[in-house]
Length: 88
Image (tube, rainbow, N blue to C red; front, side, top):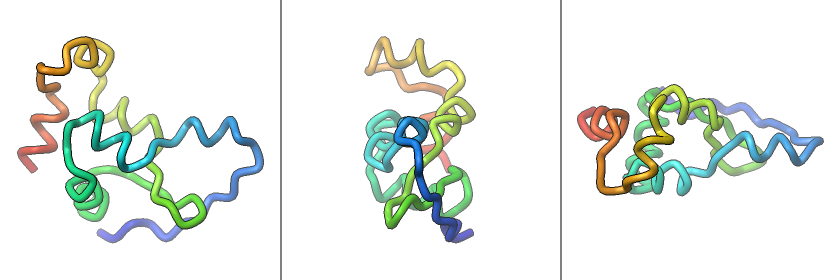
Protein backbone atom coordinates (compact mmCIF):
# COMPACT_ATOMS: atom_id res chain seq x y z
CA UNK A 1 0.00 0.00 0.00
CA UNK A 2 1.65 3.26 -1.10
CA UNK A 3 2.05 6.30 1.11
CA UNK A 4 -1.18 8.24 1.21
CA UNK A 5 -0.94 11.19 -1.10
CA UNK A 6 -2.62 13.57 1.28
CA UNK A 7 -1.17 17.02 1.86
CA UNK A 8 -1.96 18.67 5.16
CA UNK A 9 -1.76 22.44 5.37
CA UNK A 10 -0.75 23.68 8.80
CA UNK A 11 -2.18 26.97 10.00
CA UNK A 12 -1.28 26.46 13.64
CA UNK A 13 2.32 25.45 14.42
CA UNK A 14 1.17 23.60 17.57
CA UNK A 15 -0.21 20.92 15.26
CA UNK A 16 3.30 20.22 13.95
CA UNK A 17 4.31 18.82 17.36
CA UNK A 18 1.61 16.14 16.92
CA UNK A 19 3.62 14.65 14.04
CA UNK A 20 7.01 12.95 14.04
CA UNK A 21 9.62 12.69 11.34
CA UNK A 22 10.69 9.34 9.91
CA UNK A 23 14.04 9.82 11.63
CA UNK A 24 12.38 10.34 15.04
CA UNK A 25 10.32 7.15 14.65
CA UNK A 26 13.37 5.24 13.41
CA UNK A 27 15.38 6.40 16.42
CA UNK A 28 12.60 5.47 18.83
CA UNK A 29 12.33 1.92 17.51
CA UNK A 30 16.05 1.64 16.68
CA UNK A 31 15.34 1.00 13.02
CA UNK A 32 16.79 2.55 9.90
CA UNK A 33 14.93 5.27 8.03
CA UNK A 34 14.58 2.82 5.14
CA UNK A 35 12.86 0.27 7.40
CA UNK A 36 10.39 2.91 8.60
CA UNK A 37 9.62 3.94 5.02
CA UNK A 38 9.07 0.26 4.16
CA UNK A 39 6.66 -0.13 7.11
CA UNK A 40 4.78 2.96 5.94
CA UNK A 41 4.67 1.68 2.36
CA UNK A 42 3.44 -1.74 3.52
CA UNK A 43 0.67 -0.12 5.59
CA UNK A 44 1.99 -1.06 9.04
CA UNK A 45 2.53 2.59 10.02
CA UNK A 46 0.09 5.34 9.06
CA UNK A 47 1.69 8.48 7.69
CA UNK A 48 0.77 11.69 5.90
CA UNK A 49 2.65 14.16 3.77
CA UNK A 50 2.94 17.65 5.18
CA UNK A 51 4.21 19.78 2.37
CA UNK A 52 6.67 17.40 0.74
CA UNK A 53 7.75 15.64 3.93
CA UNK A 54 6.43 12.36 5.31
CA UNK A 55 5.19 12.69 8.89
CA UNK A 56 3.86 10.09 11.31
CA UNK A 57 1.12 11.10 13.75
CA UNK A 58 2.34 10.88 17.36
CA UNK A 59 -0.68 8.66 18.13
CA UNK A 60 0.92 6.00 15.90
CA UNK A 61 3.64 5.56 18.53
CA UNK A 62 0.91 5.04 21.12
CA UNK A 63 -0.73 2.47 18.88
CA UNK A 64 2.51 0.64 18.08
CA UNK A 65 4.09 0.91 21.52
CA UNK A 66 1.54 1.56 24.29
CA UNK A 67 4.21 0.96 26.97
CA UNK A 68 6.80 3.26 25.44
CA UNK A 69 7.35 5.34 28.59
CA UNK A 70 8.70 2.27 30.38
CA UNK A 71 10.81 1.09 27.43
CA UNK A 72 12.33 4.56 26.96
CA UNK A 73 13.79 4.42 30.46
CA UNK A 74 16.12 1.56 29.44
CA UNK A 75 17.25 1.85 25.82
CA UNK A 76 18.84 -1.63 25.90
CA UNK A 77 15.44 -3.28 26.37
CA UNK A 78 13.61 -4.00 23.13
CA UNK A 79 9.99 -2.92 23.38
CA UNK A 80 7.32 -5.41 22.28
CA UNK A 81 6.46 -3.07 19.40
CA UNK A 82 10.07 -3.00 18.23
CA UNK A 83 10.25 -6.78 18.33
CA UNK A 84 6.99 -6.98 16.36
CA UNK A 85 8.13 -4.41 13.76
CA UNK A 86 11.45 -6.13 13.21
CA UNK A 87 9.67 -9.46 12.83
CA UNK A 88 7.44 -8.15 10.01
